Length: 457
Ligand code: ADP
Ligand code: MG
Image (cartoon, rainbow, N blue to C red; front, side):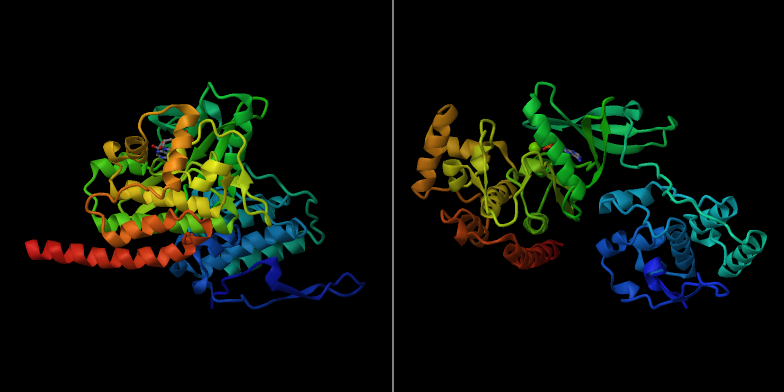
């Protein structure tokens, strides 16, 4: 029988055994809810107890997995209940396993050897419990009072990237404040390194931007969702200032790079729209307002998955306060902003919904430059400069004018855009409600597309 959740929390103390003449006695208790119903996120939370092979695949739960968990439990015992990797975020934990990170070892050498076998990344190389028992008994006989170290041994940090091992391959793109490049991180210098996307602040950026930069890194570190770009770590200059953000590389680039060059069906566009809503809904559950949702900031993983990126302007809004006032909007992407943002500098969840409407418009125009939101709005207001553009844009939106319906965009989808562009923020649909709407639309249009293809054959 496999237990599936061996850890100190599931070991009950029947007798402390500290009194003269008594010995300690413990009992393993039940594993709690069934392992197979855990979500992927819950499984990642169980790192470092869960065996690496079980993070990806629940069906890999085996006696081998119990051996790994046993090793971690021994560590907890040796460290007086301190939990290894406790402070790590979910993506850091996941990365620790991906990089085959080594967990700390008990200070007693023989116990450390045994434990490192339990923590082998190859499940079939972990010793059997019979062997473990034999070794432990032997150890105990040789060493009646093995004492363990008080302090927690240190783990080498997989989220720290040393600048000298980052080799640039090429530029990937740049936006308002940052530029992103493709790099290989190759500490062994033997071509086995991993491909990563590295974002750095543009050199002309001033001191004040460093604060929002550090904030972007702090935000991305805490986020964990299938539709949000994954943080891998950071690299810092001597002196400790964080200069580069390391994230997963998405080879297909942003929607703006992808859509004009690929034959994408309406079904696929609606699937992307749904995923953006899922990512945004998660962000909202973490109380973050993105403030810069646009096709250029949505990255494409493959033809079925997109992820929200670029948290440069995102700010955590404190609970009980439903907006954040922007002081300096000099460089803002105004054509994606809700009319209330333009007028009062108020950003909230509803203004993200407005920007989503503009992003949906971009999706349905396949990010074609001539139909871009700035191009279309300027067509409507005439060429103006600086603050005047904002004044004209506000006038236009207040007259009730909106971006036009993109060619071949179904009316019901255009109606959804217009709902996101309601003047009154409370009338805009929340992301949570948009998810099932896009799911249904996706299924319907996918079916239509498939039957059209079949008819042609
Ligand atoms: P900025 O804050 O300067 O707008 P972004 O994070 O939006 O920077 O990145 C700028 C561009 O770089 C994106 O539009 C995209 O084309 C490219 N890019 C960003 N991150 C990645 C990534 N992880 N993988 C691939 N391309 C990326
Ligand atoms: Mg950007």
